[in-house]
Image (cartoon, rainbow, N blue to C red):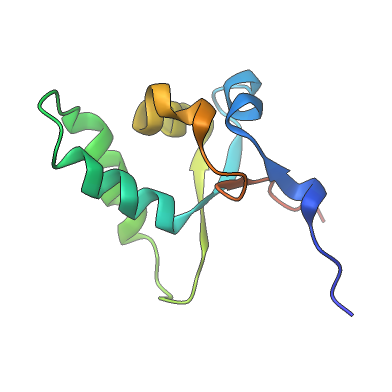
Length: 96
């Protein structure tokens, strides 16, 4: 039986409180959504768009649901919407 990893999930508030250089997993679908939403904004942050494109280019498996990102990049890309992100947007990295 597979145990759920609920304790691995992070909220937007958790991300805001983390150190800038911490690396966590981000749901790839949230990145695609943010990229799509940015195309409708009049006040586009081109640096954030470039970060998202760079991260998405690292996805080498279409079935991969999470990709690593630094907290500083996450804050730049999601900004004010970070606090309202769905519960499965971010995960802690496993420590072995």
